[in-house]
Image 1 (cartoon, helix red, strand yellow):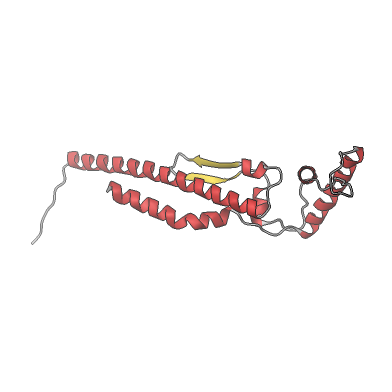
Image 2 (image 1 turned 180 degrees about the vertical axis):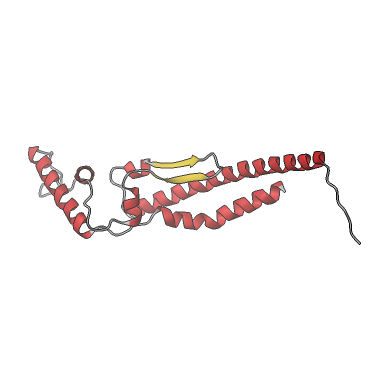
Length: 176
C-alpha cells in the first residue's frame, strides 16, 4: 500500500513567505535582545576595569562600542589600540609605544615632585625630561618582561552566555 502526497506550488510559496516573515521577526527581536546584553557586558567590563585600576586617561573606556551588524549579530568591545594588551597581556620582546606610557605618566602624576607636606609642586621644565626618561625605562622593562593579562571583557561575556541563549530561545518560541 502506498500513498501519494501532492503539494501545489501556490501553497509552497505561501508557506515559504510565512517562514520568511517569521525568520525576519525572530532576527529583529533577537538583535534587540543582544543589544541589551551587549550594554550589560560593557557595564560589567567597565566596572572590572575600574576595580582593577586600569583607568588612567579614559581612552580605553571611551572606546567602548556596541555595533549592530547587518547579519543580525551585535559586536561589543573596546576599540582602543591597547585594549587587547590589557585583556590578554603582552609577551616579552616588543616594547609598547613610549608616547602612550608618557601620557599615562602625565595623567598619573608619576614624574611630579612633591613638597614635604605631600602637596604636588608646579610642573617645571625638567618634568618633561623626567617623564620621557621614565616612559623610556618603563617601555623597555615591559619589552623585556611583558605584562600579565588583566581580563575584563571576556569574563563579562562569559557571565552573559546563558542569557544570550535564553533570549534566542524565547524569541524563537514566541514567533513559532
